[in-house]
Length: 560
Ligand SMILES: [Zn+2]
Image (cartoon, rainbow, N blue to C red; front, side):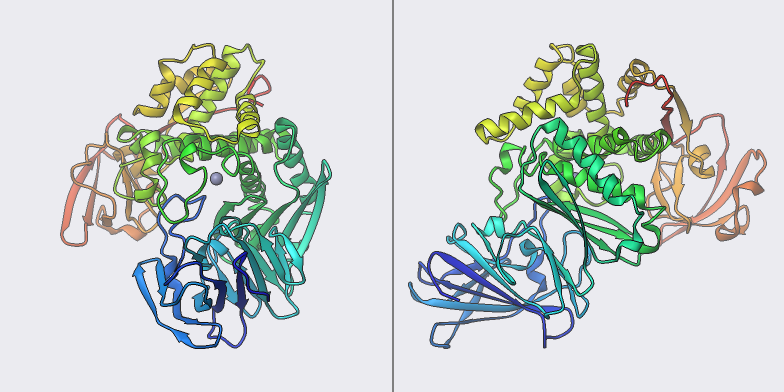
């Protein structure tokens, strides 16, 4: 390859290396003495710091004469090469690819899958140069990627930021289905063959694609790639990119039937991100800075609205029955009402704190999920817009306004601009409620009841089906380890997350079944927090815990 200060050249090799390693070679002419190469510290779609550097070993640098140059670390994600200005440097390292999820990398003799953001380094101060990527894969490998292709196995992007946003999947058995909407080709690449999917899959994908494009009027990209990693074990993960998405889903044996609604739902969600986050984006992240945390409070727009409307578009297309959407909605309500973090941190502050522990359960009830409470808020916004405009407009129209605004000026939105837009569409009818939804605490039960009444969705309040959750306010998993305690439970001061119930009424907990108890006055348990063993009598009263709202979608309901 021709070396030039106009581009950075990347090569990836996968053969004759230790298992699961790839070799990355980066060649560039340095514009300064002692240049620095750096790996991103996070990736768009997951707003938390990553540790990609931990997958890197055997860093080496050479000049144009093949002389080795000293390499030293300057911080956790940066490597400095001792070199003179104008030298052509070849920097290489091994990267460990054994994380098969929608944001990771994997390499074995049958599958090559990378997120360039996780495994490729940028050259500091030369990030805006075009990047040439040569993939040296076995000749039998079929490649599926949205990255612009120059020639066989050679790809060119305009900058490191662009390079970082095109995941690559390749295998000797990669299968690709396709369809076209408004002359835009959509590809569905899969690591398993088409027999793993229903025969209606392409038609079903087309339906939600058409529905979304119809609402926005235009599609932001020239082509789009769904990259499906179908795995043998249980997994559910998707990540959005500018003209593609990676979906990691399993077990493969369930994808055709049981998991099929999940596949359609997650693909609809990720496609919606093509507008909402890849283009319509918080001003704090425009442009992305991959090397520093970028805090933002508007996660309810990026993930809440996408979660709500992702499922809504599937419901609109009638691929699945109304009962399916009702069930999805009720799962959302359960996740919302069982999240007692609602009483401790607002959705705006929880968005900011994504960088702290946003993707982990974390300590009890510290925060809310921007996906779950975000989708609840999106539903309230949708209903408010319908109500204030006599059903002329919906939340989808608000998103169209944001899209048109982005197309006009290319700017990001702010908390203030979203608030102003919502108030303008709803004629200032929610100036008190909206700040409470975004910046306040609470489960918004009364607002939800109002919304369900307006949309003629019958609603019930029900408590958890689990015996201990319902009667005593603590929820155990199947191994009787406590996962969550309702703050209203009389045992909140005794039982905590992670405690394990050992015995119930003198039976080992594992032999217990709730049917053995017929309206008892009390239940005796022995439990441990790992240090001490304690015993308590649990007294049954009329009070029930872990309560949620459950809706019904009838013929008269006005949501879809
Ligand atoms: Zn998302």
